[in-house]
Image (cartoon, rainbow, N blue to C red; front, side):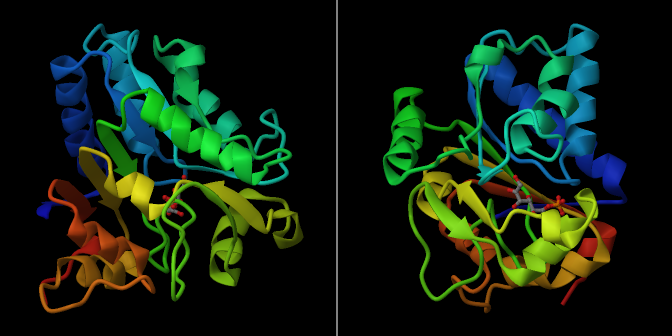
Length: 242
Ligand code: F6R
């Protein structure tokens, strides 16, 4: 795993933007896997600025998002489709039909399989952007004894509902289920970039970089140790030398 420690959040966003810009320059029709949450917002701003300045062209890029809440309309302000449009897609020259977010409405197992098929039909993921939850979840692959490898519907843990309640009026409004790519989908990406910032996620960074620490489904982020091309970009607050 390649580790980049930055002085602050802005530098994390800039370092990540360089990797995405290089990827798109090298392969203009790249398939990008994207995440929501607070962490990638700076990266999306950097890439939007670069696109508007004519620096990076998204006209042939295709995207697949990691996850979506079950039960929220795409027009719901807390849905991940809405988040992606508002924070990224509306600001760049990507074709909306080339952007994909799992359908959280009326989700059935065959639709999960359809999302897997879609990723395959696009030719697989060239570059995946990830964040990590406080408990080490990736997408909505929450800590558990076993994990589903492919796209599936999952229950959110209490800690994730608590963490995500900051985006909703009240905790009771946070959906309790989500549809998410599985770790198998994610580990099939050719290249992975994970952004982790803030002191409270230090234990996750430690678990990821500690060579002695095992791989465990109880901290899904540690499964990234199994992938040959992962770059972890974190700020100083999230990094602490052991
Ligand atoms: C969202 C996702 C989640 C987030 C994680 C961290 O699409 O995949 O796993 O990356 O919950 O969220 P933030 O960045 O808000 O701390």
